[in-house]
Length: 171
Figure 1 (cartoon, helix red, strand yellow):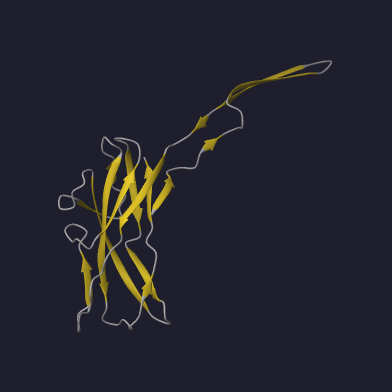
Figure 2 (cartoon, helix red, strand yellow):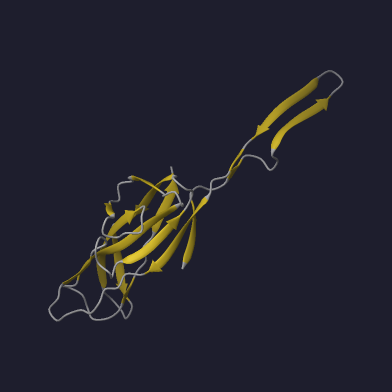
């Protein structure tokens, strides 16, 4: 799954690029105005989902599932592609509510995100939801692993569904 996330909306002050001069003449006066026009276009960041989180088999009497983003092969895996060596911030909601598909019931999933400028999960660093500055590598890539923890002690049997959103923006 490929997702393109614009870091900022394109800012275009006016539809024309360059400067324009306006002249108007009346019998008694002349009006002239210079209008400087600027366009700032910021590159997009592409977020590629390589693998989703796998929660594995639930054991009887198990009341928690934990998938480590730092060392678990069941962690989700994504690659962010942007401008080489550019700084960026990664924002996400650490807790998300999952809704039971078959009827009433919810679970709270606490996400754990780790990232690295090289494609190596074990040396990745945990990313907190505190707007830490991160940096793309020389190829314009940053590797992200997604894990987390869910408490099952009050869960009803069934399937649960929910969304997890990561926002990435250049700084």
